[in-house]
Image 1 (tube, helix red, strand yellow):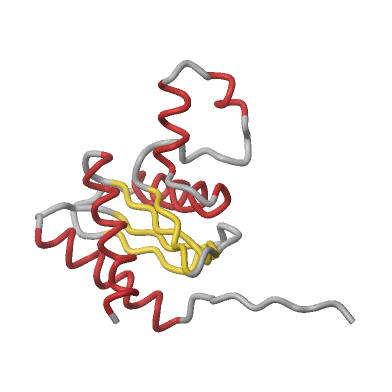
Image 2 (tube, rainbow, N blue to C red):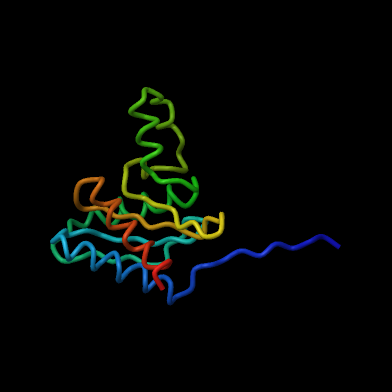
Amino acid sequence: MPTLHTRPILTLSDIDQIAQAARAEAQRNEWNVTIAIVDEGGHPLSLLRLDGCPPVSAYIAMEKARTAALGRRESKAYEDIIKGGRTAFLSVSALSGLLEGGVPILIDGHCIGAVGVSGVKSQEDAQVAKAGIAALSAA
C-alpha cells in the first residue's frame, strides 16, 4: 500500500486572519487596495476591496495571487524575468498577474495558497500581502 502524505491547508479562520492583518497594514499606511486570497490551485477564497480602490484592482489582485499560488513563488519573480529580457514569458497564458504583489503562503515547504494585493506601488502591494501572511505565524 502506498504511503500517503499530509500537508497543511488554509482554514476559514486562517483566511480571515490573513485578510484582517493585510487590511490593517493597508489602513495603517492609508493605502486603498484590494486584497485577494486564493488556495494552492489559484481558486478564490476571499476578496476585499477597500473604499476608494479602483474596480480594476480586484482583477489585478486576484491574478497576482493566482500567479503566486500556481508558480509557488512571488509574482515579482516573473516580473523580473520579463524585465531581464525574456519577454517570451508573456506568452504563458495560465499566468497573467506578472507584477509584484502576489505572495505564496508557504507552510512546512508546502504552498497552501497565496495573497495578491493591488492598488498602490508594487512593493507596497507586496508589503500588505506579506503582512497578512505573517499573521499566520504570529498566531
